[in-house]
Amino acid sequence: MRGDSNDKLAIRNVRVFDGHGLGEPATVVIDGTVIGTDASGAQTLDAGGAILIPGLIDAHVHLDSLDALDSYAAHGVTTALDMASLQGELMAALRERTATTDVRGAGVPIIASAGVHAQRSGQRAGRSDPLDSC
Image (cartoon, rainbow, N blue to C red; front, side, top):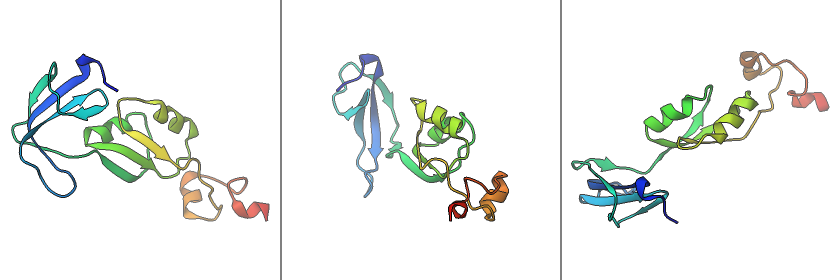
């Protein structure tokens, strides 16, 4: 599985952090969605000895706008786990976005009417209150 040749990038003189330590300066090739070492035909970028790390995961976010994912991506976060958004349409739109941070989440939360989260979100007792069905 290879990307278009226009998508192929060779990052030279980069030290890769593999989770255990830093490697010696090397060349890393990104060919579409594939990471490899064949730099033929790639656009070249000299990293000047900079460090390349795996994408970061933010495991507790509260997304509130379409621009939020781009902000996370700009800071190296490739995956964000949203903690129970009350905005279903926003979450659906965020999940459809490509070429930015991938968003995952549990969906719309169940909130007890007397809890602090209900007071913050303006929820009232009703379907969101699990005790109503008892």
